[in-house]
Length: 252
Ligand code: BJW
Ligand code: ZN
Image (cartoon, rainbow, N blue to C red; front, side, top):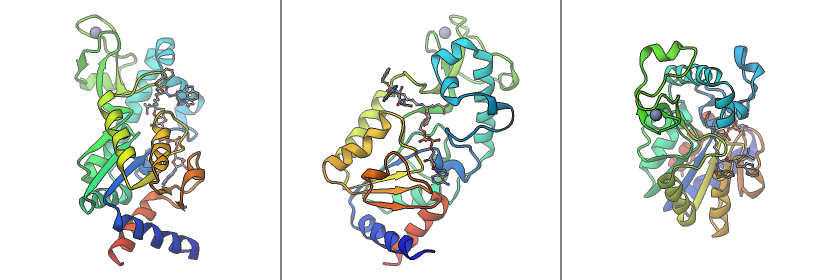
């Protein structure tokens, strides 16, 4: 481990050990080491010709509902086959040893929950939940839907069924967003992990935390849009850095 990372880990561990209220924002990078592609990574294979930003929108769904459905079924299968990595496990352990801990995720997978995190706020919804795009009625996925060329149709209104995620231009779930603002406004330490920080309003959470003086720690192998406001940048994959951080806290 290089000397700068060792020093930064020790400072971050001190801050975490003293903090009473910790808020954490995670993004796709935290699931990368579980084999789930990050959102803005070049898509692979069949999907490399498509723009994820266009697919994850009402206009993309209207233009080609079959394509969007098949993309989500492909990604759902990847999430179901994946298992939590040491980064997810370290965050669950951190929750257990912190008096007030709020985990806010932009991820649509359930790997934080499967790692043992108990109070995760999903700002962008869940890939394994479904509802009607027209009348919002909830829908239970049928095994045949997974390989269907088109989305299933709603039995109430014949609208198309869509995944329970938040697309561009859509509002975030109110209860989760409100709880996330609260956590950012009241924390005494904010961690930003594995996110490019380009998507609003999630990107505003660390801004809010910083406004009232909470130190910001970033964990990301690459600089992000949020690096400029971070007091400490831990440059490395979260599956490696977060367990090291946990060890540094315990070794104090
Ligand atoms: C690792 C790693 C390892 C890799 N360890 N790290 C102009 C200006 C400002 C705002 C807007 C604008 N035009 C429109 C907007 C608003 C828009 C927005 O923000 N757009 C921007 C792109 C500009 N936002 C919205 O529309 C939101 N709604 C909203 O604002 O409502 C009000 C409103 C309505 C109408 C008009 C205007 C306002 C909704 C946003 C919903 C986003 N949904 C998605 C899709 C979810 C479903 C799906 O998954 O298909 O959520 S988009 C996508 O981005 C997904 C992610 O959760 C989200 C964030 O991405 P994330 O997690 O940061 O991933 P990446 O891939 O970007 O980055 C990965 C990072 O990991 C990198 O930094 C790597 O280095 C790192 N990494 N390996 C640690 N091992
Ligand atoms: Zn319907």
